[in-house]
Length: 444
Image 1 (cartoon, one colour):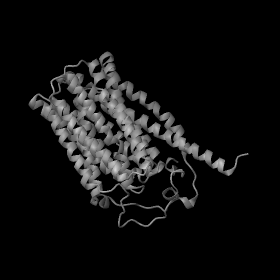
Image 2: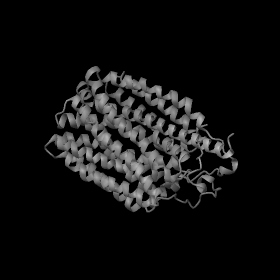
Image 3: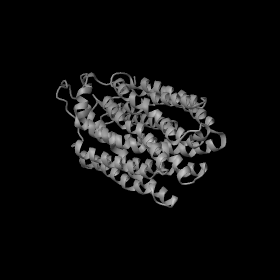
Image 4: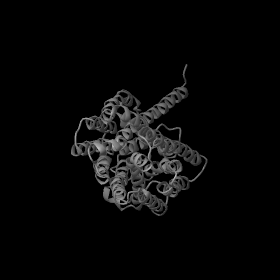
């Protein structure tokens, strides 16, 4: 006969396992997300010949995704703070999969540009939704690893896009690459639709805090912490999208690798970054669980990661040996993985449950402004200088400025208290510790 304690223990273990299944589903969806957005970069060496694209025009095409993706961040952040995040994420996933499929059917620069804009609209649901889900599922000291796992998808996706996409491109052509990925990705919706509703947990009304509208956008924008994390994200956005969009062409045009060699060598930095992100997320959570300061631990990871990446990225543009350049690039991406392992854990703590979606929307909006300009700036530099050297220099400067923003604008990693926020009841999640199963009613 089961005692109440054993029953409660079984429920706790079951709900814990379900939380991690949601994390795995998010990880898979993010892999698909980044395979989709990176496929145009993989196909760029072929597309620029077929459509007679200059480096500058190719830069505009590569940045098109980030125009719509960036603009939609604020609206999506508002949506996920107010409505069922499951259905918002589902709708976005369908839109981006159809946009990916449609990319393989279009002809001409204008149609390609439009398909990339639509892809950006669909994929804009990712970060605000994922951040809101993490706040609902995990306590602050536990968020490093699950955030790192989801962020691994942002590195594995480009690696797979480069590795698999390069071979598909070489054998079947660029249209097959887009159509196959777009149609195949829709299969992810099956476990998402079947499983996510079942993880909802009915909770005692006394455990649920009083509803709060949270801070307004005016309040958020007046906070220096918002600008600190957002400017740090701008640095990441600039460098990450520069690599994501221009790395294939850099390896083929500047370093003389074939499409097959580009597929293998171009994926290595992303694999290194994925491993560093996962290790960094676990290590930071462990350090905090052993009594380390969340401020010291998480800020150390993000600042050291940005500075190291800047230092290691500089030689990539000028060393003569292509293999040495690849080595520096892999090391730089590993360093950047230290930053990405903790960046969203910091934001989610600062924002709290009342503002996680909107803060993430603002931060990702500013961050992706870097993604909007970096492909264009790189294209102009390459066209006018015939070299990638200055493009890597500008990327390193952006990283250094991002490190300074975290150092001086984010004094402590703790929830920001908004002066005009309405008082609310303290939940058991905030008082009981790690044995409490966080609320997952957002999935109903």
